[in-house]
Image 1 (cartoon, helix red, strand yellow):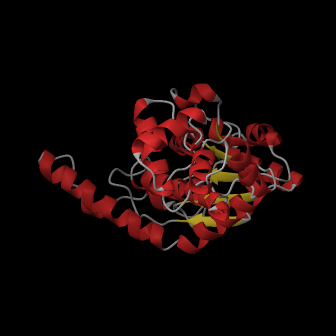
Image 2 (spheres, rainbow, N blue to C red):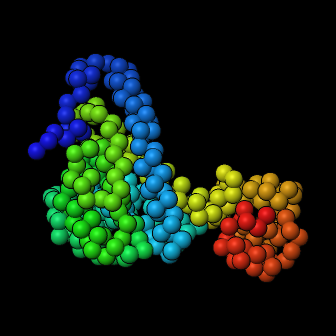
Image 3 (cartoon, helix red, strand yellow):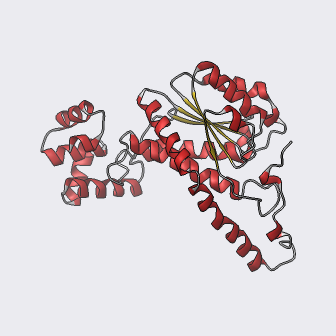
Length: 291
């Protein structure tokens, strides 16, 4: 079996247990600086993945992250941020951990080696969906099971790994491989590999949501104004885009039950709530096509 990069020893941190705390964190930070440059090398593949995901979203498809351990937790985290950020249904982006929800807090030993468990978890997929298999090593049998089932039903597949010789690289339709090099602590892939995975997941969901019209310029125009901070943000967005005062924006948002896009359209085009929503529906909810 070929050597897994994340399991190899980092020659620059062999003394990490005897140096000062300040020197320790400096070495960790120096290693972290390498991650963004490694991710940059995979921007073409990340872009392709975003285009695949956004196209499937427009067909009514969903995005599923699959992973074990740290990789699975990162998928669950990214998925959980999508509803409040982009006002999408909770099932549009889902994170599925090997071992189930309880594995988020407590490790389930050996589950990543279970091919059949991956097949079973992936039975949720349809031909409209995208399955993203996340793994630093790229070798878990669980993910091979996921990819096998995804192929069976015709779902699109993406593999995210830090190991170019990982098995999922052979099975996924598109592979995003980011070589971050050996970890500060050999095998601790929650460090640089985890950081790289989080950066990639940020790009995938943010990029796909932008492509389907969930932003206008760089504003989150579909956010759910569920607390005072978000309500204040909604007021500022409406005021700026509709070119009105904060007081006028607040009044319109209250009238529209804090729905940002129809409030903007109503103010910008000087039309009532029904006509504003009609205009948005006509253009598939994409604000830029309306104003």
